[in-house]
Length: 175
Image (cartoon, rainbow, N blue to C red; front, side, top):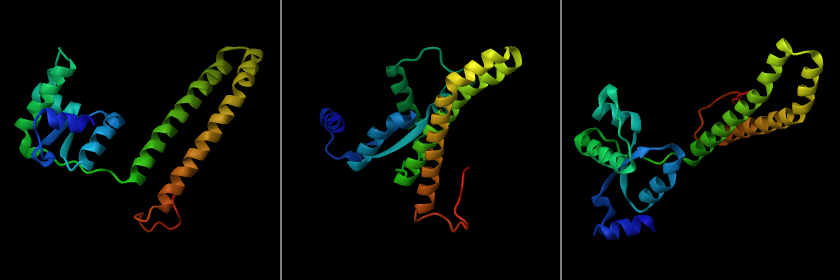
């Protein structure tokens, strides 16, 4: 609806007459990109660092608002139009693997947040404190490790079931 309203407001009847330039904002841009392309539009997805270094150099910018950023993205698109690459959607398998990888990293970070203080406590605290800390967090750490194991198995399964996978004998493993 947003895209249709935007095009209507601008008096655009053919979406292919517009080449959209957007800043890469990770997964937050997925809905806009997917729907723009489903309507037949073309676009370039540009990392903010690339825009910044091309227009501001090493010093960067002091002032930053959404309106100013929009103008900078437009300026980049105009000045470097000969260097823009038309974005293509990733395949669903790659999207799933990337989502699972992000989730895997969060699990590892959570496990680390719980285990590191216990390891440090073993160095500085007495045995009673260490024992209590381990007891308090044991179930949480085990649950996180179980979830991590499930995520890793899912990643391997998805990769091995992908019809475009290279001939890997034996199937890959990330564990």
